[in-house]
Image 1 (tube, rainbow, N blue to C red):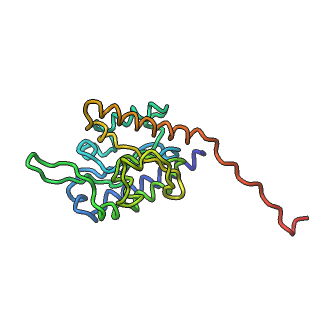
Image 2 (cartoon, rainbow, N blue to C red; image 1 turned 180 degrees about the vertical axis):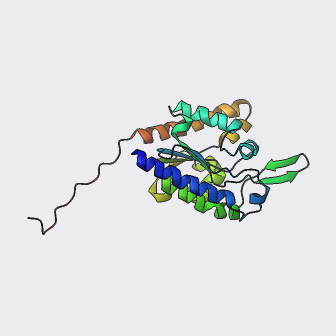
Length: 219
């Protein structure tokens, strides 16, 4: 990857982040503190896509920086990847919340919020052109494969993602953290199996382009 190509990708992503920050198509665009566009290597081979920002991410304007982010960093390290070597973003760029007796709580983004934010995510995928996409959690998976996607039954296998990019779906780190007792170890084993598949896919040699075919008019 040339330095010029990297600079061009950084420039496009920075411009897109400005546009995302100005977006007010959804109510949550008026309620959030910060638009959490995404961060990481603009030439990353692995793109990680979560559901949406939580409270800490909303405060800092960065994806996956709370407890779930700490676990994600460990997940990446387990397959020999540093956080700065991948690109991390979310399906929606603003924190979706709901009122409860104890205050604001995170909620899954609704279909309209996902649809409104999708052009930003599509642009990120187009610019970065990753070799592999890792989708974290049911809302992220459903945004690509529809509401019938059941993560407990359908995670851990390869799907054709946008632009034909191989996509793996696994549990969201926040879901892992909510487990207790023996359940947390069982879920961690499933996630580890999924991550090993991601590592193996990244280690595959790139496809060899077919040789150019001679034309009938060549001497």
